[in-house]
Length: 421
Ligand SMILES: *Cc1c(COP(=O)(O)O)cnc(C)c1O
Image 1: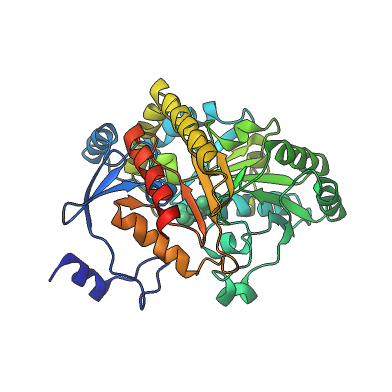
Image 2: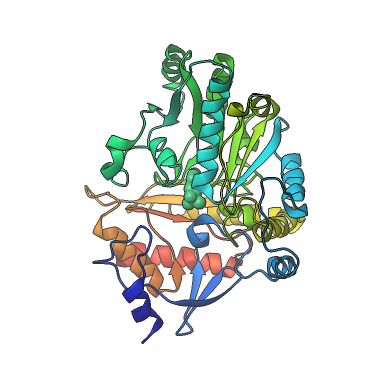
């Protein structure tokens, strides 16, 4: 039996309608921005393998560090014990985060990093005997697929079967010039109940690469600060250089209380989640009363191998060439956007850092489930490019090591698709 047949007999894939989906493409190895199929076909990974890969596939430096760690210490319980990798990663990360971030709490993935952040906020108030349990979030937000993370995400086709089980959230619009005052008013009107505000800074990925201005995010954050509403900055997608700065919140002056990381944290090598917080939040859990403890943990909390991958990824991230690459991608995206922005099939082309997105004019059917989406997906796959349009929205967010030739090839295939589809 082929690998695909064996897969189809035992595997249930994520976000996949198994009845109608095409068979999965078997991948046997990766190198740089490319993946290679069982049949030898090369694919340029234009979506960084679901937004996680930042330095390229099977990076030899990360591989070396992970291999060394594997023969030293593969795992140790993280309650009552510690290890070098977890401590060093927290030390180094806190140094490059906003100056108010003081403590690091590990978990396994993005959704769990969000669960931890929500629990920190709710229990922060609970521990002080203050009743504040409303959570504010943006409309169409996406913060993950576990129940708490789903609850603070927009209600959609993805959440519909579970909507009745999700706790209530106060949803607010993305801020812009025209509505910033009414959003502030909305926040102030529930300020005595509001525990926290959770947001994706600058880019709402899953919503369709929806982008908004740092200026208005900053104004919103300043208002939350004034009203005593804690802020959770979900950097799971946009952290580690995606937006052209190390972190998306580096584009604003205000500092969040809590930050969440995963995806690029290990360079996309393996699963790891991290939630950081201020001293003030941490201190609210210090007590002789054991009931004030943050009762949360995962079997693989701070797994040493994942930490070694994250440390290696951080070494690469801090090399000068990485930011040079990020700026190179930004510039190429800009040139391409300028070239096709007036094409009749292209609407609303937009860019933040290494993320370029555009809407494909479809008349009326723009849903995530549109057939155009599948036609585009297959068109690019056939051309040896992995792009996963969100409905009629095409986006590119490559690993930073992608070459000019590879990027130019992706652009040329998008232009060709504009003429042929
Ligand atoms: C991917 C993502 C998550 C969830 O992370 P997982 O590791 O997939 O659970 C949360 N927030 C944002 C903004 C994301 O893009």
